[in-house]
Length: 481
Ligand code: NAD
Image (cartoon, rainbow, N blue to C red; front, top):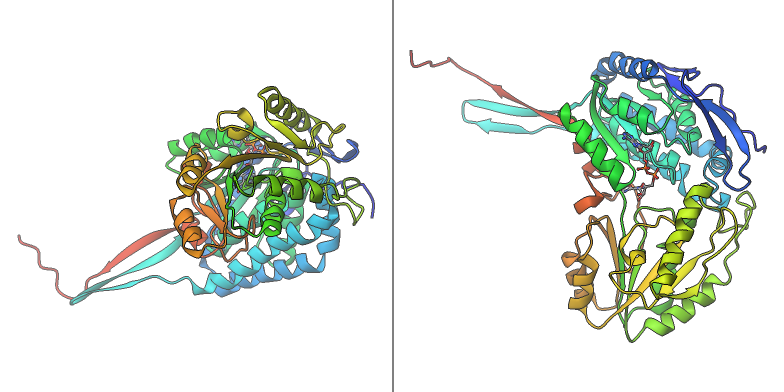
């Protein structure tokens, strides 16, 4: 295995690799900061060409028997599983995430989505509506060309989560990965062709916000699915509105994780670790506001600090490494500034802080208050803010006092309280006595400013199709004049 990750070409349009005509896009390995590939962004003309290729290919793809489309996705899933080691290595180079994680969480989750929607494709049916003599029926039809735009934390998983339901429903896609992590989507494009997808069904363009904006407003695009931050989501949603395009918005969060006194201490601590430090904390659904009931707070913090002291931080390609660098030095600086602001505001640093270069160790704050920036803003790094509460009513009110609504968790042994609390929480995805598990069978997405639409599960089908109603007249037409 090498550190070189140079692809054949930067873009993938109409079934073939194509070099970008736009500015240079160097790809750096977050662990060393060294360049591992040099790509070029797509020009405006190439974005249009990719959308045209998708529009040309889409009708024949939509006209295929759904089971045949599904078989292509299933084959792609099998290829990914066969090459998981090589693909995970590339994912680690692209993102800096430990190979221990990328081997099990990234392409594996992408393959699960392709497998799931591959199987689901043939099960999508319409409704028959009896109307006496006449009747009506519905058809679930493809939207046409869908634009997918990804974030840098789970680049290949995001590409698969968007491509799988889109393609299963007979759409074609033009995908733009994050400019920080452009490599995985190119592999998906190659694999889909190898699995039998017709050219033009899945295209990849590279570049930053400008290229993304050109894609969103391309006249051929009928739907936009974005994974990114709330400010980007607002811009993309507004741009998509102009053409009445459908949208799915998977945006940021500041999710609450509520731990009641009766919770199993080690399970709650384990979940809080998964909710804050996996992928060096760069996960949208992270439970970064950990609300601790007073009776358990100090025991929780002591056990948490003890367990975090054992974490193995280092070289992401070392299979023993559990915690890697932040995506780039700019993000690391932003996170350090957020930590400094927490200390300045008077929160107690239980562990972490500091670090060097792109590494920021797992950081935990205690004695925080709801008005502090560390308790309000998405940091998108390994920073957990703990807050204490007295009772259930208070915990729910404070958990909901945010503009975000992506996810939430509750830890308690009290069955009725667990369900009562999640019913009251304003979040799209909730966990009871678990956190951050997102199997493909389960809808995933946010409410409030955290997004619109759902990924995964049968629910995603609705977001990649439109309903046509057909009235069928069975007799004479009786007109009054
Ligand atoms: P970002 O918003 O900066 O960028 C996301 C993508 O949008 C990138 O590909 C970027 O190039 C593109 N983009 C930027 N401006 C655009 C524009 N005007 N038009 C079209 N595209 C544009 O996000 P990021 O920093 O890459 O990722 C981190 C954010 O993503 C966090 O807020 C995180 O919570 C969120 N996220 C959400 C989910 C989810 O499923 N809800 C998953 C992962 C990450």
